[in-house]
Length: 131
Image (cartoon, rainbow, N blue to C red):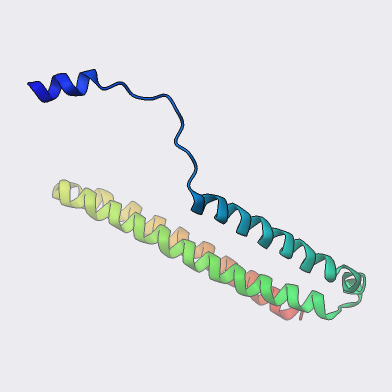
């Protein structure tokens, strides 16, 4: 009972917590990194004038776009499929009688997620064909 009275008597301060030193260093590092990134992009601007002719920068962009596109699509789809399966198995574990009602929509959902990855793979092949 005494601890409840002590807790009630504690006044919460309305001050915002001060920012730690590590947070300021992180902001400084991110701002320096972004400035460096903008400088690197600006260094390639003269070469981008030749991009319409099929220059090296265009090929680099197509290759990076294809590789990153399929990589991100596969990774995100894997996360989505894992979450969908986990939710379905959790629902089946709570109510085993509803397994037939849960299993069919889950399989349809997994097939639709996988079709998006196949679509991303098709786009990656089309980009690779332009190189």
